[in-house]
Length: 522
Image (cartoon, rainbow, N blue to C red):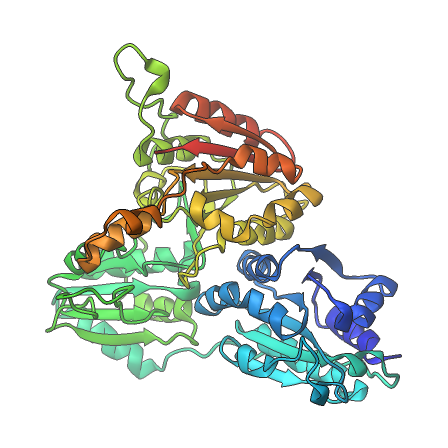
Protein backbone atom coordinates (compact mmCIF):
# COMPACT_ATOMS: atom_id res chain seq x y z
CA UNK A 1 0.00 0.00 0.00
CA UNK A 2 1.41 3.38 -0.97
CA UNK A 3 0.81 6.66 0.84
CA UNK A 4 -2.01 7.73 -1.50
CA UNK A 5 -3.88 4.46 -0.94
CA UNK A 6 -3.53 4.84 2.82
CA UNK A 7 -4.96 8.35 2.46
CA UNK A 8 -8.06 7.11 0.62
CA UNK A 9 -8.63 4.31 3.14
CA UNK A 10 -8.33 6.86 5.95
CA UNK A 11 -10.78 9.28 4.33
CA UNK A 12 -13.36 6.51 4.01
CA UNK A 13 -12.82 5.18 7.53
CA UNK A 14 -13.26 8.70 8.95
CA UNK A 15 -16.51 9.39 7.10
CA UNK A 16 -15.38 11.47 4.12
CA UNK A 17 -17.71 10.60 1.27
CA UNK A 18 -17.06 13.39 -1.23
CA UNK A 19 -14.01 15.03 -2.81
CA UNK A 20 -14.33 18.21 -4.88
CA UNK A 21 -11.32 17.91 -7.15
CA UNK A 22 -9.18 19.88 -9.56
CA UNK A 23 -6.14 17.61 -9.82
CA UNK A 24 -2.71 18.03 -11.40
CA UNK A 25 0.46 16.04 -11.93
CA UNK A 26 1.52 16.01 -8.28
CA UNK A 27 -1.76 14.36 -7.30
CA UNK A 28 -1.92 11.60 -9.92
CA UNK A 29 -1.20 8.78 -7.46
CA UNK A 30 -3.96 10.08 -5.18
CA UNK A 31 -6.30 10.24 -8.20
CA UNK A 32 -5.35 6.67 -9.14
CA UNK A 33 -6.04 5.52 -5.57
CA UNK A 34 -9.47 7.17 -5.66
CA UNK A 35 -10.13 5.20 -8.84
CA UNK A 36 -9.02 1.84 -7.41
CA UNK A 37 -10.66 2.12 -3.98
CA UNK A 38 -14.45 2.49 -4.06
CA UNK A 39 -16.30 4.60 -1.52
CA UNK A 40 -15.70 8.26 -2.38
CA UNK A 41 -17.74 10.40 -4.78
CA UNK A 42 -15.29 12.45 -6.87
CA UNK A 43 -16.74 15.70 -8.20
CA UNK A 44 -14.66 17.36 -10.90
CA UNK A 45 -14.50 21.17 -10.71
CA UNK A 46 -12.92 23.24 -13.48
CA UNK A 47 -11.39 25.71 -11.04
CA UNK A 48 -10.21 25.45 -7.44
CA UNK A 49 -12.48 28.31 -6.39
CA UNK A 50 -15.42 26.08 -7.31
CA UNK A 51 -13.99 23.16 -5.34
CA UNK A 52 -13.49 25.18 -2.16
CA UNK A 53 -16.87 26.94 -2.33
CA UNK A 54 -18.62 23.63 -2.98
CA UNK A 55 -16.92 22.00 0.00
CA UNK A 56 -18.02 24.94 2.16
CA UNK A 57 -21.70 24.46 1.32
CA UNK A 58 -21.42 20.67 1.63
CA UNK A 59 -20.49 21.17 5.30
CA UNK A 60 -23.29 23.67 5.85
CA UNK A 61 -25.85 21.30 4.30
CA UNK A 62 -24.76 18.07 5.98
CA UNK A 63 -22.69 19.04 9.03
CA UNK A 64 -19.97 16.73 7.68
CA UNK A 65 -16.72 17.78 6.00
CA UNK A 66 -15.92 17.07 2.39
CA UNK A 67 -12.40 17.07 1.00
CA UNK A 68 -10.93 19.22 -1.73
CA UNK A 69 -8.14 18.14 -4.05
CA UNK A 70 -6.01 21.16 -5.02
CA UNK A 71 -2.95 21.32 -7.25
CA UNK A 72 0.13 22.70 -5.49
CA UNK A 73 0.44 26.18 -4.02
CA UNK A 74 -1.09 28.07 -6.96
CA UNK A 75 -4.11 25.75 -6.91
CA UNK A 76 -4.54 26.50 -3.22
CA UNK A 77 -4.20 30.20 -4.06
CA UNK A 78 -7.07 29.89 -6.53
CA UNK A 79 -9.17 28.41 -3.73
CA UNK A 80 -8.31 30.99 -1.07
CA UNK A 81 -11.20 33.44 -1.58
CA UNK A 82 -13.83 30.80 -0.92
CA UNK A 83 -11.75 29.23 1.84
CA UNK A 84 -11.80 32.69 3.43
CA UNK A 85 -15.61 32.62 3.21
CA UNK A 86 -15.66 29.10 4.65
CA UNK A 87 -13.44 30.12 7.56
CA UNK A 88 -15.76 33.02 8.34
CA UNK A 89 -18.71 30.63 8.18
CA UNK A 90 -16.87 28.17 10.49
CA UNK A 91 -17.14 25.33 8.00
CA UNK A 92 -15.26 22.08 8.26
CA UNK A 93 -13.22 21.22 5.15
CA UNK A 94 -10.28 18.87 4.52
CA UNK A 95 -7.93 20.32 1.89
CA UNK A 96 -5.60 17.83 0.24
CA UNK A 97 -2.98 19.96 -1.51
CA UNK A 98 -0.48 18.22 -3.74
CA UNK A 99 3.09 19.47 -3.74
CA UNK A 100 6.49 18.88 -5.23
CA UNK A 101 8.25 15.69 -4.13
CA UNK A 102 10.30 16.38 -1.00
CA UNK A 103 13.60 15.97 -2.86
CA UNK A 104 12.41 18.03 -5.86
CA UNK A 105 11.23 21.05 -3.89
CA UNK A 106 14.76 22.47 -3.29
CA UNK A 107 15.20 22.71 -7.08
CA UNK A 108 12.58 25.51 -7.16
CA UNK A 109 10.60 24.18 -10.12
CA UNK A 110 7.99 26.60 -11.57
CA UNK A 111 5.07 25.47 -9.38
CA UNK A 112 7.09 25.54 -6.16
CA UNK A 113 5.48 28.00 -3.73
CA UNK A 114 5.11 28.85 -0.05
CA UNK A 115 2.14 26.49 0.15
CA UNK A 116 2.26 26.35 3.94
CA UNK A 117 2.28 30.13 4.19
CA UNK A 118 -0.78 30.52 1.97
CA UNK A 119 -2.61 27.71 3.77
CA UNK A 120 -1.89 29.15 7.21
CA UNK A 121 -4.10 32.20 6.57
CA UNK A 122 -7.27 30.10 6.33
CA UNK A 123 -6.48 26.86 8.16
CA UNK A 124 -7.17 25.93 11.74
CA UNK A 125 -5.11 22.77 11.19
CA UNK A 126 -2.07 22.58 8.91
CA UNK A 127 0.39 19.76 8.33
CA UNK A 128 2.78 18.65 5.60
CA UNK A 129 3.21 14.90 5.25
CA UNK A 130 6.85 13.80 5.57
CA UNK A 131 6.63 10.15 4.55
CA UNK A 132 4.21 7.55 3.22
CA UNK A 133 4.07 5.98 6.68
CA UNK A 134 2.66 9.15 8.24
CA UNK A 135 0.07 10.11 5.61
CA UNK A 136 -2.76 8.06 7.13
CA UNK A 137 -2.12 9.39 10.62
CA UNK A 138 -1.87 12.95 9.33
CA UNK A 139 -5.13 12.59 7.43
CA UNK A 140 -6.98 11.20 10.45
CA UNK A 141 -5.80 14.18 12.51
CA UNK A 142 -6.89 16.59 9.77
CA UNK A 143 -10.35 15.05 9.50
CA UNK A 144 -10.84 15.15 13.27
CA UNK A 145 -10.00 18.86 13.22
CA UNK A 146 -12.36 19.53 10.31
CA UNK A 147 -15.22 17.78 12.09
CA UNK A 148 -15.08 20.45 14.80
CA UNK A 149 -15.86 23.13 12.20
CA UNK A 150 -12.49 24.33 10.97
CA UNK A 151 -10.49 24.17 7.76
CA UNK A 152 -7.82 21.46 7.89
CA UNK A 153 -5.11 21.47 5.23
CA UNK A 154 -2.89 18.46 4.55
CA UNK A 155 -0.06 19.12 2.10
CA UNK A 156 0.89 15.93 0.27
CA UNK A 157 4.33 15.90 -1.42
CA UNK A 158 4.19 13.64 -4.45
CA UNK A 159 6.72 11.12 -3.16
CA UNK A 160 4.77 10.59 0.08
CA UNK A 161 1.86 9.54 -2.14
CA UNK A 162 3.68 7.14 -4.48
CA UNK A 163 6.06 5.52 -1.96
CA UNK A 164 5.10 2.16 -0.46
CA UNK A 165 4.63 1.74 3.28
CA UNK A 166 1.37 3.60 3.77
CA UNK A 167 -0.61 2.85 6.94
CA UNK A 168 -4.31 3.83 7.14
CA UNK A 169 -5.17 6.15 10.00
CA UNK A 170 -7.95 5.43 12.48
CA UNK A 171 -10.85 7.77 13.29
CA UNK A 172 -10.25 10.16 16.16
CA UNK A 173 -12.92 11.06 18.72
CA UNK A 174 -14.39 14.52 18.26
CA UNK A 175 -15.27 16.26 21.53
CA UNK A 176 -18.61 17.93 22.06
CA UNK A 177 -18.55 21.69 21.93
CA UNK A 178 -18.17 23.23 25.38
CA UNK A 179 -21.09 24.90 27.10
CA UNK A 180 -20.99 28.13 29.11
CA UNK A 181 -20.58 27.89 32.86
CA UNK A 182 -23.63 28.00 35.16
CA UNK A 183 -22.31 31.33 36.48
CA UNK A 184 -22.52 32.82 32.97
CA UNK A 185 -26.12 31.66 32.61
CA UNK A 186 -27.03 33.13 36.01
CA UNK A 187 -25.35 36.46 35.22
CA UNK A 188 -27.14 36.86 31.88
CA UNK A 189 -30.49 35.86 33.39
CA UNK A 190 -30.03 38.44 36.16
CA UNK A 191 -29.16 41.10 33.60
CA UNK A 192 -32.25 40.36 31.50
CA UNK A 193 -34.51 40.55 34.53
CA UNK A 194 -33.50 44.20 35.07
CA UNK A 195 -35.59 45.25 32.10
CA UNK A 196 -32.84 47.47 30.69
CA UNK A 197 -32.85 47.56 26.86
CA UNK A 198 -31.11 44.39 25.75
CA UNK A 199 -30.64 42.46 22.54
CA UNK A 200 -29.68 38.86 21.76
CA UNK A 201 -27.41 38.67 18.70
CA UNK A 202 -27.35 35.17 17.21
CA UNK A 203 -24.76 33.67 14.89
CA UNK A 204 -22.96 30.43 14.15
CA UNK A 205 -25.05 27.29 14.59
CA UNK A 206 -27.81 28.92 16.65
CA UNK A 207 -30.04 29.91 13.72
CA UNK A 208 -31.94 26.63 13.68
CA UNK A 209 -35.59 26.03 14.45
CA UNK A 210 -34.62 24.92 17.97
CA UNK A 211 -32.26 27.83 18.62
CA UNK A 212 -34.74 30.38 17.32
CA UNK A 213 -37.59 28.98 19.41
CA UNK A 214 -35.46 29.25 22.54
CA UNK A 215 -34.39 32.79 21.65
CA UNK A 216 -38.01 33.82 21.03
CA UNK A 217 -39.00 32.35 24.40
CA UNK A 218 -36.29 34.41 26.11
CA UNK A 219 -37.16 37.65 24.34
CA UNK A 220 -40.92 37.19 24.84
CA UNK A 221 -40.34 36.70 28.58
CA UNK A 222 -37.86 39.52 29.12
CA UNK A 223 -38.74 42.13 26.50
CA UNK A 224 -35.30 41.92 24.93
CA UNK A 225 -34.99 42.23 21.16
CA UNK A 226 -33.46 39.74 18.73
CA UNK A 227 -31.30 39.99 15.62
CA UNK A 228 -28.90 37.81 13.64
CA UNK A 229 -25.51 38.82 12.31
CA UNK A 230 -25.36 40.59 8.93
CA UNK A 231 -24.15 37.48 7.08
CA UNK A 232 -24.82 33.96 8.34
CA UNK A 233 -23.67 30.52 7.30
CA UNK A 234 -27.06 28.85 7.65
CA UNK A 235 -30.54 29.91 8.78
CA UNK A 236 -33.65 27.73 9.08
CA UNK A 237 -36.61 29.80 7.92
CA UNK A 238 -40.14 29.66 6.55
CA UNK A 239 -43.64 28.79 7.68
CA UNK A 240 -43.87 27.37 11.18
CA UNK A 241 -40.43 28.63 12.15
CA UNK A 242 -39.67 31.70 14.26
CA UNK A 243 -38.71 34.64 12.02
CA UNK A 244 -35.57 36.64 12.61
CA UNK A 245 -34.12 39.65 10.85
CA UNK A 246 -30.45 40.46 10.39
CA UNK A 247 -28.44 43.56 11.23
CA UNK A 248 -28.69 45.65 8.05
CA UNK A 249 -25.65 45.94 5.81
CA UNK A 250 -25.79 49.74 5.20
CA UNK A 251 -23.87 51.46 7.98
CA UNK A 252 -26.54 54.03 8.90
CA UNK A 253 -29.32 51.44 9.00
CA UNK A 254 -27.15 49.14 11.12
CA UNK A 255 -26.41 51.88 13.64
CA UNK A 256 -30.14 52.71 13.80
CA UNK A 257 -31.02 49.06 14.44
CA UNK A 258 -28.80 49.03 17.53
CA UNK A 259 -29.65 52.50 18.82
CA UNK A 260 -30.85 52.50 22.43
CA UNK A 261 -29.49 49.04 23.27
CA UNK A 262 -27.74 49.06 26.65
CA UNK A 263 -26.77 45.39 26.72
CA UNK A 264 -25.80 43.32 23.68
CA UNK A 265 -25.68 39.59 24.40
CA UNK A 266 -23.61 37.56 21.94
CA UNK A 267 -24.59 33.98 21.16
CA UNK A 268 -21.95 32.45 18.86
CA UNK A 269 -21.62 35.93 17.38
CA UNK A 270 -19.01 38.66 17.19
CA UNK A 271 -19.48 42.30 18.30
CA UNK A 272 -21.02 43.99 15.23
CA UNK A 273 -18.78 46.28 13.19
CA UNK A 274 -19.09 48.06 9.87
CA UNK A 275 -18.15 46.04 6.82
CA UNK A 276 -15.73 48.83 5.90
CA UNK A 277 -14.52 52.07 7.43
CA UNK A 278 -16.56 55.09 6.32
CA UNK A 279 -15.37 58.67 6.81
CA UNK A 280 -17.01 60.28 9.83
CA UNK A 281 -18.84 57.12 10.90
CA UNK A 282 -18.01 54.72 13.74
CA UNK A 283 -16.46 51.32 13.11
CA UNK A 284 -18.26 49.65 16.02
CA UNK A 285 -22.03 49.59 15.50
CA UNK A 286 -23.10 49.43 19.15
CA UNK A 287 -23.92 52.66 21.02
CA UNK A 288 -21.08 54.08 23.15
CA UNK A 289 -22.96 53.27 26.38
CA UNK A 290 -23.75 49.68 25.36
CA UNK A 291 -22.11 46.86 27.32
CA UNK A 292 -21.31 43.69 25.39
CA UNK A 293 -21.83 40.33 27.12
CA UNK A 294 -21.02 36.83 25.86
CA UNK A 295 -23.56 34.10 26.52
CA UNK A 296 -21.78 31.63 24.22
CA UNK A 297 -18.41 32.17 22.56
CA UNK A 298 -17.79 31.23 18.94
CA UNK A 299 -16.49 27.77 19.86
CA UNK A 300 -19.23 27.04 22.39
CA UNK A 301 -22.66 25.44 22.00
CA UNK A 302 -24.94 28.45 21.69
CA UNK A 303 -28.13 26.43 21.43
CA UNK A 304 -27.35 24.64 24.70
CA UNK A 305 -26.65 28.03 26.25
CA UNK A 306 -30.01 29.37 25.06
CA UNK A 307 -31.75 26.29 26.50
CA UNK A 308 -30.07 26.83 29.88
CA UNK A 309 -30.94 30.53 29.84
CA UNK A 310 -34.57 29.86 28.94
CA UNK A 311 -34.78 27.38 31.82
CA UNK A 312 -33.20 29.87 34.22
CA UNK A 313 -35.77 32.48 33.21
CA UNK A 314 -38.64 29.97 33.25
CA UNK A 315 -39.43 31.21 29.75
CA UNK A 316 -42.25 29.29 28.02
CA UNK A 317 -42.09 28.87 24.28
CA UNK A 318 -44.43 31.41 22.64
CA UNK A 319 -46.76 30.63 19.77
CA UNK A 320 -45.19 31.37 16.41
CA UNK A 321 -47.41 33.70 14.37
CA UNK A 322 -48.71 32.18 11.16
CA UNK A 323 -47.29 33.97 8.14
CA UNK A 324 -49.58 33.37 5.18
CA UNK A 325 -47.88 32.07 2.09
CA UNK A 326 -48.10 34.85 -0.52
CA UNK A 327 -49.32 34.56 -4.07
CA UNK A 328 -46.84 35.19 -6.88
CA UNK A 329 -46.35 38.90 -7.51
CA UNK A 330 -47.10 39.93 -11.08
CA UNK A 331 -45.68 43.40 -10.54
CA UNK A 332 -47.39 46.75 -11.03
CA UNK A 333 -48.15 47.05 -14.74
CA UNK A 334 -47.10 50.08 -16.70
CA UNK A 335 -50.07 51.71 -18.46
CA UNK A 336 -50.56 50.05 -21.82
CA UNK A 337 -47.70 47.54 -21.31
CA UNK A 338 -48.84 45.10 -18.60
CA UNK A 339 -46.14 42.60 -19.58
CA UNK A 340 -43.44 45.18 -18.94
CA UNK A 341 -44.02 45.84 -15.26
CA UNK A 342 -40.89 47.05 -13.44
CA UNK A 343 -39.08 44.19 -11.75
CA UNK A 344 -38.62 45.26 -8.12
CA UNK A 345 -36.81 43.40 -5.31
CA UNK A 346 -39.95 43.02 -3.18
CA UNK A 347 -41.88 41.55 -6.13
CA UNK A 348 -39.15 39.00 -6.90
CA UNK A 349 -38.87 38.03 -3.23
CA UNK A 350 -42.65 37.64 -2.93
CA UNK A 351 -42.78 35.35 -5.96
CA UNK A 352 -39.89 33.30 -4.61
CA UNK A 353 -41.71 32.91 -1.29
CA UNK A 354 -44.92 31.92 -3.04
CA UNK A 355 -43.38 29.30 -5.32
CA UNK A 356 -40.45 27.89 -3.31
CA UNK A 357 -40.73 24.11 -2.85
CA UNK A 358 -40.70 22.53 0.60
CA UNK A 359 -37.27 22.05 2.23
CA UNK A 360 -35.40 23.96 -0.45
CA UNK A 361 -31.90 25.35 0.09
CA UNK A 362 -31.33 28.96 -0.91
CA UNK A 363 -27.82 30.20 -1.67
CA UNK A 364 -27.91 33.98 -1.44
CA UNK A 365 -25.31 36.09 -3.23
CA UNK A 366 -27.82 38.70 -4.31
CA UNK A 367 -25.41 41.51 -3.30
CA UNK A 368 -27.48 44.68 -3.97
CA UNK A 369 -30.78 43.79 -5.70
CA UNK A 370 -31.35 40.79 -3.43
CA UNK A 371 -30.27 42.44 -0.19
CA UNK A 372 -33.83 43.08 1.02
CA UNK A 373 -35.31 39.68 0.14
CA UNK A 374 -35.30 38.45 3.73
CA UNK A 375 -38.32 40.26 5.12
CA UNK A 376 -40.50 39.24 2.15
CA UNK A 377 -39.72 35.51 2.37
CA UNK A 378 -40.74 34.58 5.93
CA UNK A 379 -43.95 33.10 4.51
CA UNK A 380 -42.20 30.67 2.19
CA UNK A 381 -42.33 26.93 2.73
CA UNK A 382 -39.73 25.76 5.29
CA UNK A 383 -36.26 26.18 3.83
CA UNK A 384 -32.59 26.83 4.59
CA UNK A 385 -30.96 30.15 3.71
CA UNK A 386 -27.18 30.39 3.26
CA UNK A 387 -25.08 33.49 2.67
CA UNK A 388 -21.45 34.35 1.91
CA UNK A 389 -20.25 35.32 5.40
CA UNK A 390 -16.71 36.24 4.41
CA UNK A 391 -17.67 38.88 1.85
CA UNK A 392 -15.35 37.52 -0.86
CA UNK A 393 -17.66 37.60 -3.86
CA UNK A 394 -17.92 34.69 -6.22
CA UNK A 395 -18.95 32.16 -3.59
CA UNK A 396 -22.58 31.77 -4.63
CA UNK A 397 -22.41 29.45 -7.65
CA UNK A 398 -19.78 27.12 -6.12
CA UNK A 399 -21.83 26.94 -2.92
CA UNK A 400 -24.93 26.09 -4.96
CA UNK A 401 -23.04 23.17 -6.53
CA UNK A 402 -21.86 21.91 -3.14
CA UNK A 403 -25.30 22.14 -1.57
CA UNK A 404 -26.88 20.38 -4.55
CA UNK A 405 -24.28 17.59 -4.44
CA UNK A 406 -25.01 17.16 -0.72
CA UNK A 407 -28.76 17.09 -1.42
CA UNK A 408 -28.55 14.60 -4.30
CA UNK A 409 -31.21 11.91 -3.98
CA UNK A 410 -33.13 13.78 -1.26
CA UNK A 411 -35.63 15.51 -3.54
CA UNK A 412 -34.55 18.92 -2.26
CA UNK A 413 -34.18 21.79 -4.71
CA UNK A 414 -31.32 24.27 -4.43
CA UNK A 415 -32.04 27.85 -5.48
CA UNK A 416 -29.14 30.19 -6.22
CA UNK A 417 -29.89 33.92 -5.98
CA UNK A 418 -26.91 35.29 -7.82
CA UNK A 419 -25.76 38.79 -8.80
CA UNK A 420 -24.42 38.98 -12.34
CA UNK A 421 -21.03 40.55 -11.58
CA UNK A 422 -20.10 38.09 -8.86
CA UNK A 423 -21.35 35.18 -10.97
CA UNK A 424 -18.53 35.78 -13.41
CA UNK A 425 -15.91 35.12 -10.73
CA UNK A 426 -16.78 31.43 -10.68
CA UNK A 427 -18.93 30.85 -13.77
CA UNK A 428 -17.18 27.48 -14.28
CA UNK A 429 -19.46 26.11 -11.55
CA UNK A 430 -22.21 25.86 -14.19
CA UNK A 431 -20.28 23.10 -15.96
CA UNK A 432 -20.13 20.95 -12.83
CA UNK A 433 -23.85 21.54 -12.24
CA UNK A 434 -24.58 20.31 -15.77
CA UNK A 435 -22.18 17.36 -15.58
CA UNK A 436 -23.83 16.16 -12.36
CA UNK A 437 -27.38 17.07 -13.51
CA UNK A 438 -27.90 18.81 -10.16
CA UNK A 439 -31.37 19.87 -9.02
CA UNK A 440 -30.52 23.54 -9.08
CA UNK A 441 -32.37 26.71 -10.10
CA UNK A 442 -30.10 29.69 -10.70
CA UNK A 443 -31.60 33.19 -10.77
CA UNK A 444 -29.10 35.66 -12.22
CA UNK A 445 -30.02 39.17 -11.09
CA UNK A 446 -28.76 40.99 -14.17
CA UNK A 447 -28.52 44.72 -13.60
CA UNK A 448 -25.37 44.80 -15.74
CA UNK A 449 -23.36 46.82 -13.26
CA UNK A 450 -21.43 46.46 -10.00
CA UNK A 451 -24.38 48.05 -8.22
CA UNK A 452 -23.00 47.41 -4.75
CA UNK A 453 -20.02 49.65 -5.53
CA UNK A 454 -22.31 52.46 -6.65
CA UNK A 455 -23.75 52.39 -3.12
CA UNK A 456 -20.27 52.22 -1.63
CA UNK A 457 -19.18 55.33 -3.54
CA UNK A 458 -21.83 57.30 -1.68
CA UNK A 459 -20.93 55.63 1.61
CA UNK A 460 -17.25 56.57 1.48
CA UNK A 461 -17.90 60.06 0.10
CA UNK A 462 -15.96 59.57 -3.14
CA UNK A 463 -16.82 61.54 -6.27
CA UNK A 464 -16.85 59.19 -9.28
CA UNK A 465 -16.31 60.47 -12.80
CA UNK A 466 -16.56 58.84 -16.22
CA UNK A 467 -13.56 56.55 -15.80
CA UNK A 468 -14.77 55.37 -12.40
CA UNK A 469 -18.30 54.74 -13.64
CA UNK A 470 -16.98 52.77 -16.61
CA UNK A 471 -15.21 50.44 -14.17
CA UNK A 472 -18.56 49.67 -12.52
CA UNK A 473 -20.44 49.05 -15.78
CA UNK A 474 -20.91 45.47 -17.00
CA UNK A 475 -22.39 46.56 -20.35
CA UNK A 476 -20.62 47.14 -23.65
CA UNK A 477 -20.89 44.28 -24.31
CA UNK A 478 -23.76 42.94 -22.20
CA UNK A 479 -23.17 39.59 -20.55
CA UNK A 480 -25.50 36.95 -21.98
CA UNK A 481 -26.07 34.36 -19.28
CA UNK A 482 -28.49 32.33 -21.40
CA UNK A 483 -25.71 31.69 -23.90
CA UNK A 484 -23.10 31.18 -21.19
CA UNK A 485 -25.32 28.56 -19.56
CA UNK A 486 -26.04 26.83 -22.87
CA UNK A 487 -22.32 26.71 -23.60
CA UNK A 488 -21.83 24.68 -20.43
CA UNK A 489 -24.81 22.38 -20.91
CA UNK A 490 -27.54 24.10 -18.84
CA UNK A 491 -30.98 25.00 -20.14
CA UNK A 492 -31.71 28.67 -19.60
CA UNK A 493 -34.15 31.46 -20.42
CA UNK A 494 -34.41 35.20 -19.92
CA UNK A 495 -37.20 36.93 -17.96
CA UNK A 496 -38.05 40.58 -18.50
CA UNK A 497 -41.32 40.66 -16.51
CA UNK A 498 -42.75 39.23 -13.32
CA UNK A 499 -45.22 36.91 -15.13
CA UNK A 500 -42.34 35.49 -17.14
CA UNK A 501 -40.25 35.00 -14.00
CA UNK A 502 -43.14 33.26 -12.23
CA UNK A 503 -43.65 30.85 -15.11
CA UNK A 504 -39.95 30.01 -15.36
CA UNK A 505 -39.55 29.59 -11.60
CA UNK A 506 -42.53 27.25 -11.30
CA UNK A 507 -41.36 25.22 -14.28
CA UNK A 508 -37.81 24.89 -12.94
CA UNK A 509 -39.06 23.67 -9.57
CA UNK A 510 -41.08 20.93 -11.26
CA UNK A 511 -38.20 19.47 -13.25
CA UNK A 512 -35.02 17.57 -12.57
CA UNK A 513 -31.61 18.98 -13.29
CA UNK A 514 -30.27 22.52 -13.47
CA UNK A 515 -32.02 25.53 -14.98
CA UNK A 516 -30.84 29.15 -15.20
CA UNK A 517 -33.04 32.25 -15.34
CA UNK A 518 -31.46 35.52 -16.40
CA UNK A 519 -33.67 38.13 -14.76
CA UNK A 520 -33.16 41.60 -16.25
CA UNK A 521 -33.45 43.87 -13.25
CA UNK A 522 -31.84 47.03 -14.64
